[in-house]
Image (cartoon, rainbow, N blue to C red; front, side, top):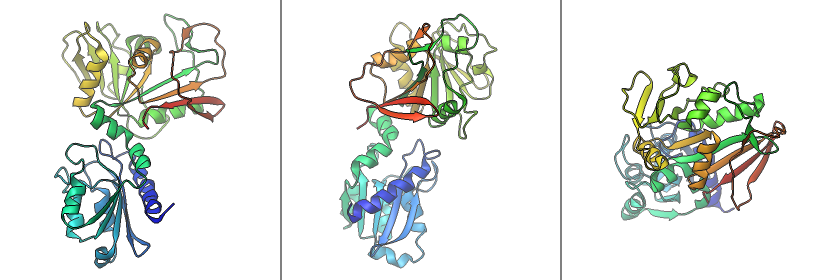
Length: 346
């Protein structure tokens, strides 16, 4: 690892501190180095607040050293006015002579313009240091801006013989997750802006889709209910968290409950994803049931898949979705269960 890679690696460490609050902005870390010594660090803490470069520059105790320093930043400095002034302008103002950038920002208002602005000001700019790692860090932001849809994660738990539940018409679902792996499920929910289930799952399982076993923000709850047949007493309608109902009927929205009309004569998945994109919902977690998960798989609409394999044997019931993926998954063991993780972003 050379010196540029060493300091960019530190940028990535810092950037991850913004995981919970930076979205829908990207996670960004910045390090300022003077004669092989770090004199300033910062990261983008919260959407709408100062960017990583600003926080790093503010942390420097001897500002006069900036004129002899290099600033490392994991993502291209912005060149446009948003909720904060352009970071490229601040770097130019402080006369920092060299900038090392991890990767170009795919956001259309930035993409390459920040780098060009710095170069036009006579600043030496190096681009692409640990580029793969920097891109992967912000894969949700990149997918959202490049593919014009939210980053999609599919998640389910299945028995060792490939079932996700017993056959039933009512009652509670068979619990394949144990209390500790359930905590990991809630962590996954906290990492996503929205969570989607189908009508049958909402009615039979009566899930709350909140993060009771983890800290963070609850995702917006989404449910498909074409004919508005779900009973009002379900936990999804408890007003604790906003719930969006996708339906073909016209219905007035009420407190924490919004009805969104879809055309069910055509594929509804692209319609849902377009609505989420237009509403700046950057990530979507799909939790079930089988038909809904299979529809995303068959359409190739996924970025990550997490399958929790429980040791239980059900022998019959609702079959798990068919995950016909050629690539080998990452395999992890947590609390006695095996987790298979597939990822399409490279």
